View 1: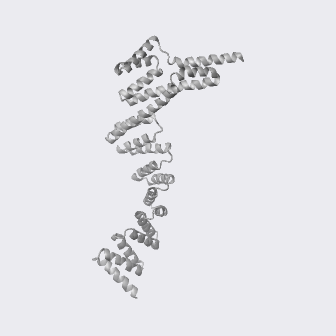
View 2: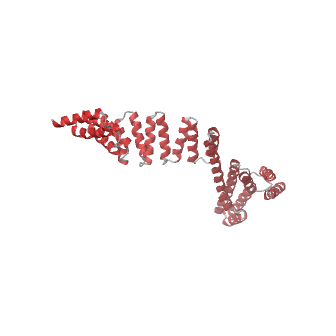
View 3: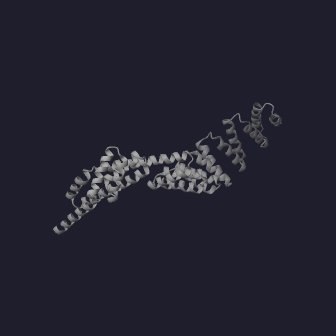
Length: 359
């Protein structure tokens, strides 16, 4: 058992040495690091940067040099892509140290405490890691704003190139994917635009607006079957958005599926009883399905909502005449006459209704 413990301690020390060998520098490297720090303090960034880079040539994982180079690119050069690259390398190195510390804790608690005190607490790696993550987030935001500005200036190829880099940095960002979809759409590349918009729904299954955008694109391409699939997804995610139900009705109308045209217009009417478009659609679809009573009922609702609409009153008057509903015809023909006093057709229908009602 004693031999096993000795071996574990030796192994733990080997790990510690391996981890912090990544921070070791030669005498020349230490000299360059000191000189770089002096130049940085004095604001001589153009002299500090090559010295830090020489340190990283000797030891690519040196935490101090990585942090300083990233800071120069961020604060001085405003080169947020390069800054992000160095901050990411810094995070990787700190994560490695934390991982080795966690491993050491399971093997020798005493050595782990020494390890933490000597290498982690002294360098304040907890705070450094937190700050570095904030800085990488800031780099991403600034890069996003740059790409967005290119998009606003209609420099779509350049904006796409930047958004692709941003997507590589943070592949879980739906904001980037949407901007790629919008940029490709502006270029007229519907295939690529759809590809990136669909990817947003893979990352966020509850993004009803993305589903609607996809459906709208398919509708514009006259691919009504796919449009229906995506409008349906959007309506399930957000059943209070009547636009998706209305668009479902339109898509089914293109496919001449009267039952679903009726179903989704009724849904719109249920959610928004004053939606005039749905009411007119319902009047039309009931007429098409030979349910004249229902058709007239909805046309009357349209007139209640828009009593000055001559077309509605005129159309209803003729329909009531065809159906020989003379009492109602007299009412609506008189409305028509009030709206258009010189209308001979309105007067003729009034005369017809009066004549029929006397018989």
